[in-house]
Image (tube, rainbow, N blue to C red):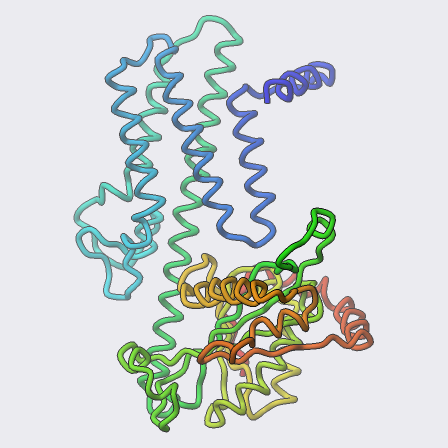
Length: 430
């Protein structure tokens, strides 16, 4: 890192440009790394960014004793304790601290707008210490830095660099707070929509909710393999869907699920092994078409489905909107009526647990001296010994000609969709 900073300073001087200080340079490197990773659509990279931000915050606190006048060890120690407390709150307690209901804010719990310092519709006669702790911490550190007086120009530049670094670190942590708050709010809206649908006699059996997600790329495996085989593996894609509907009373095994009756929602899983490793729009639309056919047979009384996903770019880019409309016209008996997106990966613990169970299923299959090298092998592993209860497993092929025609048709309007649609959180198809 020091080598990079030295090279940057030399380049800035040779170009006649002013260079930023060491702290700001390091913060830029780390923040840019986090932002580039976040473009991939994996929300959990935010957590890595927050951890780095708190590390830099502690580095700034350690430098306070070197200022003139220096901060006392008592003050620095107190600020370090506050920083640890804020980090624990942001990482572990924030989501449970937010109240996504429409009833307003109560003592100790807040609506999303209040948590991100927005103007909400509720009256507040008090200020929450947990939500404002980050602002107070950054303000106090900023006051200490601003009260310092340095004599040499280089030290003045370093002091300005510390101030800029503090602003960036605080902004990055606050972005995490807003990110988590939006996820809580979006998941609450989905839960409200589902509860309203299940409680309404008209829509109780006619609407099903489908949570879409991709399991991470699955690598082939054998009981014994050499190193060359390991590095030559190609990943296989496994899209999955968690279907949520009202409990059934038709005498089936699913109808006798006591958990579904107590919770009020019946879960059914559909796993799709696709002979196409690319997680692109063509794969999503192909799986969605197969999903419509399967769910129509399993839920004949349903005529509408509400799709739910995280903020992976393949779902939120908007390129699949025209194809959803096309599927709706092709299969009017079970049409997509709404698509809801959650920014943070919240509310799909059951689907993640289902995906995790497949790892044990594949390990058991391989220990029987079977190999998983192709999508056919993967399908055999997932359906071994009858598969898993409440789960439908599909093996989907890929028509190369249709894929080529699809990509050619998509390219004609892809740029227009991308320019007009940034992020989709709720789309209604009527």
